[in-house]
Image (cartoon, rainbow, N blue to C red; front, side, top):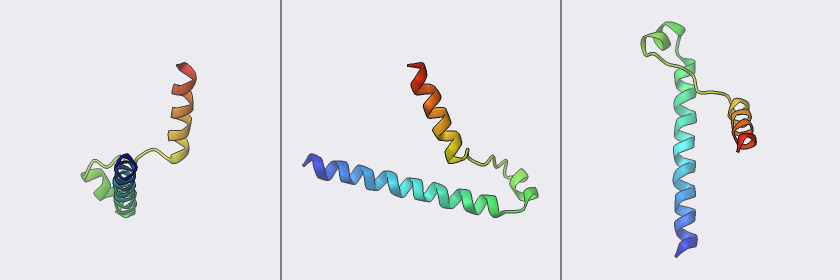
Length: 60
């Protein structure tokens, strides 16, 4: 059934996004020295993602 397939995909994407946010929070809480050792670059903020999406959509 397509409806249940779509719900399953949405649930999977939500679970993955939640896991990524949790990982980012944990990594950002580490001291700067450890972040540097792990070569951690924090993900872009939500506003940066929205801006990038808006710029790309205008170009099309």
